[in-house]
Image 1 (cartoon, rainbow over the protein chains, first blue to last red):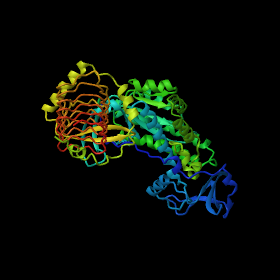
Image 2 (cartoon, one colour):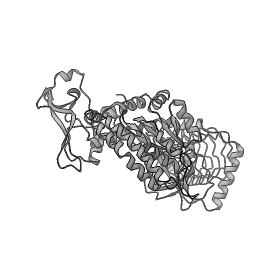
Image 3 (spheres, chains in turn yellow, green):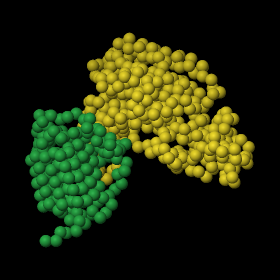
Image 4 (cartoon, chains in turn orange, cyan):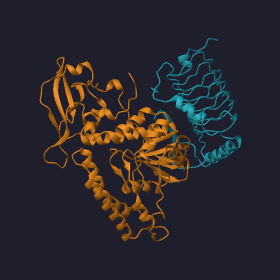
Length: 376
Length: 198
């Protein structure tokens, strides 16, 4: 299969442990913290908002430790992080500079868009760590026709099949390459909180990549939902010419209706008081059917059957990579086990932290989603 | 006759090479060691295809390298896409004899070929960076413009080899033999030249 894309290596350079402001909670210095302000609620203002809104559950408070200015962060009124105010996390500062928030944030905290991107970044890092052990090279955000998977993985010994490159030697990365590879792998990443369900929308999005050539894997920290409505599609035959086969409009409309109904039910069950993730999840559920409709418009050629494999054991994931199957959906628990089996404890821990951390916890403590790379 | 000082014989050897601390040499070796072994028959077919590639004017391109999480990937930049180029990166080639073979513009990044006989091979303008070639003999080889950067070339013999415009940046050349080698415009920044013979 020939793939035409740009090639940009995934390059996430997390700070070393000594470059991250030290959390003084649990140290003798915590007792020395003397407050100089009230507990202040976090505020944030999105681009489309006229005034800031409060982020619930988290507060901060200024104070001093031995006359040095410090900040205490609270999650649900419980002390979670205490740092010196002038300690600087350069990695985070750069991220915040790239997407400056409308409001100033207290030291070494992230805005909610940055907190979301930290999740995605962390999951990409895990994917790269894992596939490096299998001798794959990871490329970030390859641009294919109409679609943009999160990662492209090429086995080292097949990366030689880059047949043609356009671009100048002076350019850091080639802007267009043609790759002939049977084992190229697209990975779609969904770095959601562990309670968010991943369903038809995400699966069809990943299916579109496998349709472009190569295999595709969906790796998520959310929860894989049952996919009965996809079976409804598979039970209906396609119509059209031999080159452009598609479902009847009514069939696909029925399918999206089923997804919409299921997701509305899920959305009603969400406890909105828990976290900002509740709002994100509700948004994902309620917009899924619209995204499916959009996908239907641009997918010109559907296969007779959307074949997918739920990879619910470490061995199933490994077998999939060696098989001729095209679309694999990775069960988070199985992937976590596989990371442990491959002796990647930092990656396994980080995977757990992505699944269990609410957005608010990441906002007040972004290093929560950094892997511990270097002990010192 | 008195020998020329090292810095004159080996151009730019007094300079530091680029930082390469983020290259994962252990992993590179592991990849090559666990790679598929190429049989002599397969190699013959690769050579045949490579000659076709050269005949169709496939040469003349430039190499670009990328560091991807500590692994080096070599990419050939050319005006047109011509299939058949010998791409042997990250492979174990110990079992192959390359003596007298014609392999200009080949990709040999990260290969493992220790104590091999590669005398009189033509590797002009090939990319052979990050290779593990301890003790291999390149006697009488033609390596014009070949990029050997960061390769382990300890105890290699380059006796009477043509190494004009070759790049030996950050190579380990301990105990290597350069007697009679042509080194005009070659580069040696950061290279280890302990006990080299010249």
